[in-house]
Length: 246
Ligand SMILES: C[N+](C)(C)CCCC[C@H](N)C(=O)O
Image (cartoon, rainbow, N blue to C red; front, side, top):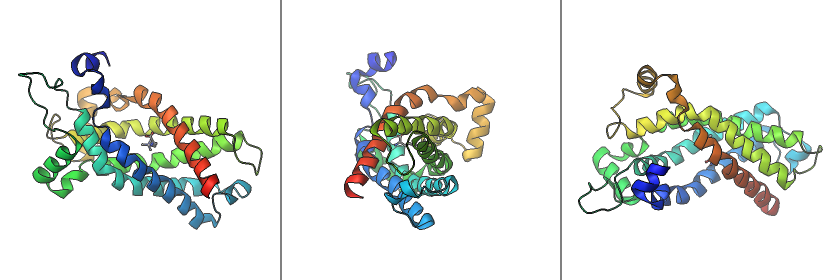
């Protein structure tokens, strides 16, 4: 954090932000929409009915994994651009300093498209899918379990319960997701700052061989620190919007 601030000023912390802000609405819409509609297909209960007829944890896990798998492909291009921009560490425009490779998210997308073709925008998508499919299942199971433990049967959880359950769902799912999150980011940077890999398995094996197993938990602390507030607010919005419109 100190180096980023000194090297790139406060703006360094908001690099690559415009795309995630635009994309997170679409990705969350797919994430929560597929989850809720898969539960509707599995249990024939709407969101409101599920408080009185709670789905089984198996159904919640299946719906979460389905949602994680489908939202990964919506997320992949936006996530790639975010990682590429966040890994540009050239100092802010100082005379004589080397210019960063990408001038911004649109230039980044156009450069990847020109240099690597449309498939280039899905670099790291497999690792992202492997990361998100099981961990979104864990995400929703954790949320539902904590809500049920703190809410009388048949009632809606309170705002405090939703915030705490959502926050811990975020942390739990990111703890499970961080190893593959590291691999995903390396696959997305392959060929630029990272050596090119022969695939996800090659990236996992060579990273473990060269840097030890600790490499798979790089970023866990920062991921967890941001995961609580982000997902607490996400679930509160989800619950209240559905109560308003559901
Ligand atoms: C499944 N995985 C842990 C990767 C993400 C689940 C939480 C996603 C949330 N939008 C966030 O940014 O934290």
